[in-house]
Length: 281
Image (tube, rainbow, N blue to C red):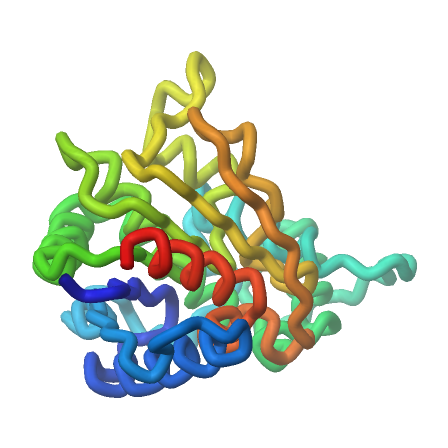
């Protein structure tokens, strides 16, 4: 039995499984050491790595994404929600779009300005567009979604004590768990999760208006969201799903607001994993 299975989120398509394991395990160990978890140095981590699947030539030239590339459904809604989460208290001053840009609605133009002023992902709105395009592809491309879920199936064969999932990975982990006929892991820890965004929950469960989304078949679900993290558009998941969720608010810098390795060293994340590992020890 392996201690932890980790599921990555966005922007891992230029990385590798080994890089993920090295970076994530180091961060997990440091966090566990900080909370004085016994045996932190020996923790075993298996990675569900699917970033390479985005390199199949179907995603377009993501480095050149512009607002006009956003689909009018889930992608635009999520982009606007992230922008709303970055909004400063100062009065928004509209700026005209450059004549060379393709036309997009004023609300989207305003969203671009808020994102670039906020500084998340170095203030690059194109990076946020790439983020929502990756989320949109997982939820909208059935074949691609099945390939991602198959990767998590392989990783979960090690029967972990904890499943920790970041960003889009939390959507993948939740989706996978809901498809299992029997419980497969006791503790789920989600970090920087966009599962609070209604559009994502609606894409996962089209009957969302009639009922809450189902419980993912775990004993304990801990959700950690940084107040600065605009991707975790809704910080509190408890009450949005059937069953109790322990929500913990973290604090990251703006530049590291959505960083997986920063989240993995947060006291709330480390404490949740320490508790799970001790209970199953």
